[in-house]
Length: 109
Image (cartoon, rainbow, N blue to C red; front, side, top):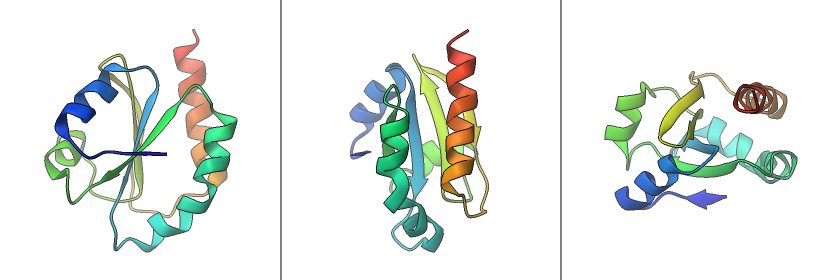
């Protein structure tokens, strides 16, 4: 999993194909809960690049996308936002995989 560190990196990733921005914070218990199964999700979805975004460090980007609850996921494909899974609720591996399956089907049409 890549970690977002700069605005230039953000712009490059938004322009890429199938980039999943995973919004987290250091103090978020639900974010800590999901991190162990991210490698498994990456293995199941090799066409996607998952990028961890510290919401507190990239607050402008988070607000632009309406991300207040964490963990949340926003997918970009060639500079276009193509889907999101935004809420303050804990997410399961199955829910994240179902979300990415839906996005994958949408982009494969």
